[in-house]
Image (cartoon, rainbow, N blue to C red; front, side, top):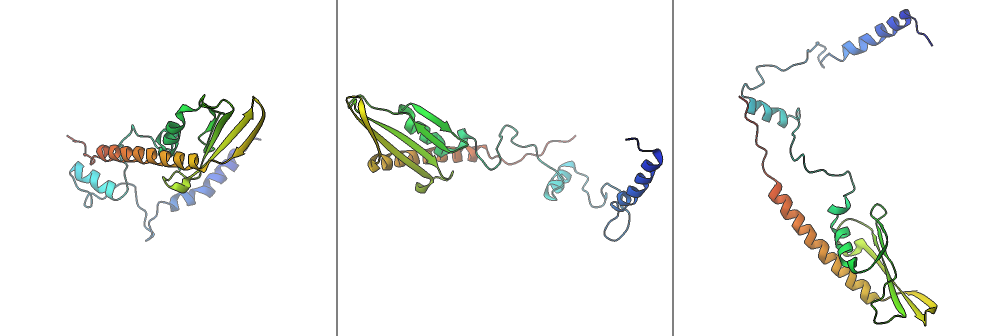
Length: 193
């Protein structure tokens, strides 16, 4: 559709008062962009500090650190890393960080060939607490490789796994906090000649 140049001019003239009114201050006077030399220090370091304190600037600090939004990355989640470390001896069937679940494959330790276990770890929160994990242990008992029966249970293994995962997560958290403390250096203002 072609819009005539008169229609374009009419739209421009209609929008122009809104654009010009945005240049007014609260007292109704027009204010041009820029700063008042009487209120701005001449020293560049002090000017940078004043702008940052007033929220007018931004710092390019710690550009190498990248953080996600609300969710942590799997490598920075202490519970996740500790769970993978504890379950490292078992083959993993399904590992889904975004879904918050780890499921192992059936495993036996060659002592009892007719009995194997499968573990499922579900993450309820990223916080290191005893109620942040839902661990289930399934046991499969077979008689001569046939007539297999699967049942859930063995609370001793559940408690031991939970204890080991939380202990490992606490160690990871402590190391992370120490590293962040070492990396937090005060901001040094650049020299401006």
